[in-house]
Length: 237
Image (cartoon, rainbow, N blue to C red):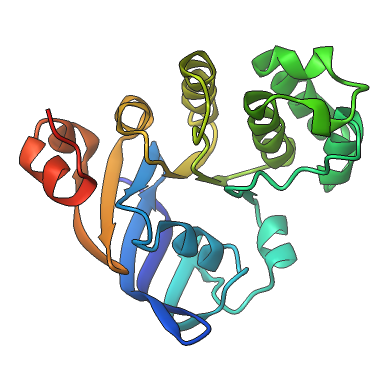
């Protein structure tokens, strides 16, 4: 039986007066990448922010490693081993790449230093700009830095929001390779509009539409279902 690392059950989230998530439920298994798909405004980013405690869940439960976390603060959730790469990347442009990594570290122990080495092997471009301000990095390099900051700590669950947005195909290939490496030791919950990328790294999917989950299954099932792709994702052959 597959273990469930994260379970959302009937999540209701508001932004101001707007009822964004209207009973969202899904699971993220310990053995792969779960992808949240849907058109713009479907509630995907709001789902990640609600898990991270950045937006309050008015109703429903979020269970992580068997514990409810929906009432916890973002810093408490981060210390439980959940990393978050927001759509805007969340890096500090005026700090160097090295300083960005230092700020992100929850501990400075041998295990963290080893993870830093591993991250720099994965994203070699960051080594080249180690002493440079993060603001001069390209969009792809900034995304690498954002992911690196999230996984330099001991991370059981990594939430990534739209990592390929606006990036060149060669950078997308690098990110796909990185996520396939990350999934070997962390569960990944990914929001992604690039269906090719999602299909290459994803194991399971949930489609959101107007704040509700309308379909879910294995990524292979979705790849083979062009009617479903067209109806909810606007993908046409």
